[in-house]
Amino acid sequence: MTDDRPGMVTVPAVTRTVIERLAPAELSVLETYLTAYEADPGLVRHLKPRSGDDATGFGGVDASLTPYVVALASSALTFVAAQAGEAARAAAGERIRRVVDWAFRRGVDPVVPELPAASVAALTSDQLDEVRAVVYRKAREFRLAESTSKNLADAVVGTLVTSVE
Image 1 (spheres, rainbow, N blue to C red):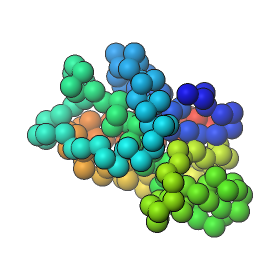
Image 2: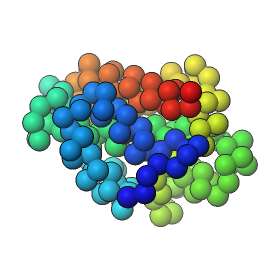
Image 3: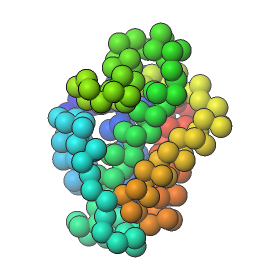
């Protein structure tokens, strides 16, 4: 797996930071999930919701948070890329154009979303609130507990903000 690229906000970087903060016991399996994701970014679309509504993600192997954090980080970066619209397309070039096209058409080969740090740094507080809402809704779709969903949404947005400081 390639390490994170300087000046880019990536799914692996966001995931790594969130897991370090919220579930450090899962660091031993993190690279396995990231390698699988980078080999096939579309696999996050096939992640099944947890059974029951009491899942917290802070338990044993069966309660791993990591695959959900990978999916949430991917959703957040894809959303930011889509929201950036034409300005991001012109400024960021072909890679962002492919991510945005994939997000809307799902017909092109899936790519791992990554954004220039400058694009993330330009997000307003209202836009960050939208990202938080998207991540929260996605976490709830996975049937994660409400408190876990809120914590993950806050952690993903917090990681985006601190990744450009």
